[in-house]
Amino acid sequence: MGVTKAADRFVYKSGCSQQCRRQLLISTRSIMVHLSISLVVALVLCQQVVGQEQKITFVNKILPVLKEKLVYNETEFKLLEQKNKPKIDFFPNGTRPQSAGAGMVRILPTGQIVGGFRAARGQFPWQVYIVMDKSSSCGGSLISPQWILTAAHCVLGFSDFEITLGSAKRNIVEAGRINVVTKHKFIHHGYNDQNLQNDIALLRLNSPINITGLKSPFINTIRLPKVSDGSRTFVNTNGVVSGWGKTSDAGTVTVQLNYVTIPVISNVNCSAVYGAEYIKPTMMCVSGANNKGICSGDSGGPLVVKESDGQWSQIGIVSFSAYSCHNYPQGFTRVTSFMGWISNHTGIQFRK
Image (cartoon, rainbow, N blue to C red; front, side, top):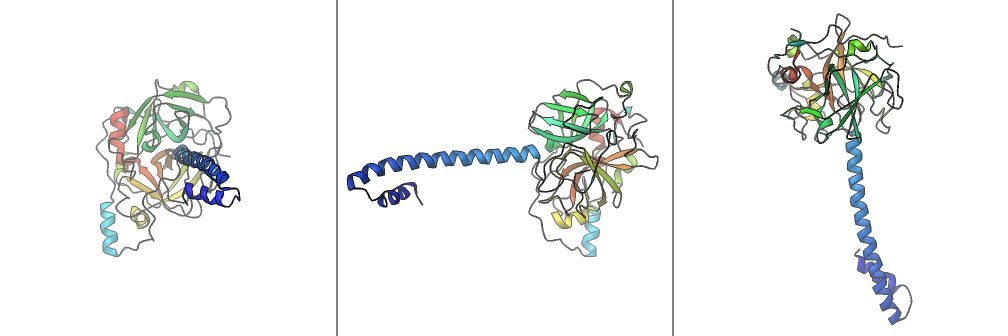
């Protein structure tokens, strides 16, 4: 109903004289027009706030509308499997090897994420908490004393990054915790914010952290995968993802670091939900079944696997999930697909 028509109806029903009606009509129309303008402004501001809220919490990055799960015949399956064979972008040429202790946990665990457990302090000493422009937050991982690995969608559009290391609780200043600030971000040149291709970024600290000098069991680097892992899919491998994200669709981001163990699934099975045009070899997926997995606020965090020597290596970066944090495949940036890019920026030498 138009504003003037609504005013006319109100005045008509008022029961006052013709002259009174005329004067009342002018006043009422003026009031209602002003009210309608205020309402429009309020709605616009509301939409802006909602947009901010989505940006701040990194509400699940939505690819296209989820499809009914596709069923591939044997020929289609083999073709997709062939197309999704992972490979290294280019051979890493770094000259600085990671420390022998990278990926080592010095504290035995006694998250949600969703369907997980609370992490003991020092259980994931490479996990960092990133606050962007004092408004938004993401996770990340320490891969060298001077470099943080995270997702491109976490740092795009921001300029100031406050990074917390050695902490399990965001709301408590724990002894041995370190806070550093940097402006140095490096987003992959091929990043596409529409389909989350190449969702990877680096933050460079102003100066290296003397990890060995700290003698802290709460801070350590995560080991990166081997060059020989470049063609490995990691399907059916149990990965562990950690973060301060929501513990359910209806929940809020937590103050406590949490973790969950989830199996890696094939990209073909993942594309049966999201579509083969969106799931690429540079991505990897986990099942998300049994109400376990990532949720809003976990973006940029590490997916790690335990190797035969007992140390941990990072194979994925939290990138996207579906409408719900439950029971849908969830997407990660495949770290092995960006060894050359990482090495080129950081100088890190990858294990053979």
